[in-house]
Length: 274
Image 1: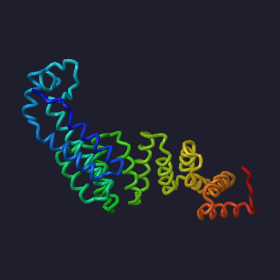
Image 2: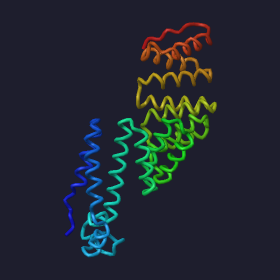
Image 3: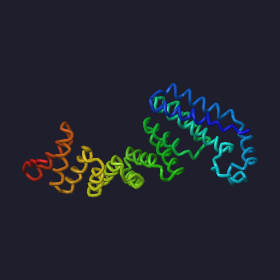
Image 4: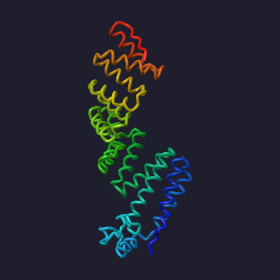
């Protein structure tokens, strides 16, 4: 008989919940239990059962009988679940600060599941933290290759390229990220910074302004918009943004310095009351 008790899923979910609460030791116990339960299954027998019961989908030559192609007596279901357990386990290791262990777990996972986009993305994140930009970029691109609309990995590609001072390429990656996640104001700020580095002050100012539509009181966005406007000689706009930045973050030296430059450019001191 096929065991559909789902204890493996229960252990996985409990482990994920505990990991979110930073209870990493308890989460590890749950992930280990889930992995052991999956490993104990006779996956070859599962494949036979799927053909016999006709619930493994078209790939097993049977009718689905109202079930999905990922029926629990299909070996592919358990292989996918095992990969999910392995990823969540690795993420918990990463979250606990054990980057070395997490990286080893993720490399093992991607060896078995080379198109696991999240695993590649987390490998990129770890490599980025370690300063290994080449490996980080390769991993992030592997993630995007596995899932073309992977927001996290696309954002990572931009971050890594920016750190490598490949600003034009970074801007392309950030633009793609913004297309995937239009309301991510942090993504628009990073796109704007990349555009500024390539000398596109007008485009940068537009992206800063767009980011402020989603987060009106972001001091960094106001500073960036002010600096971009100042570079174009648009002094009123520059002073507005830099004044707002100073109000939001009174101890910001960049905001103060840039505002002083804008004021000096017109030869008088503007006082705004908002």
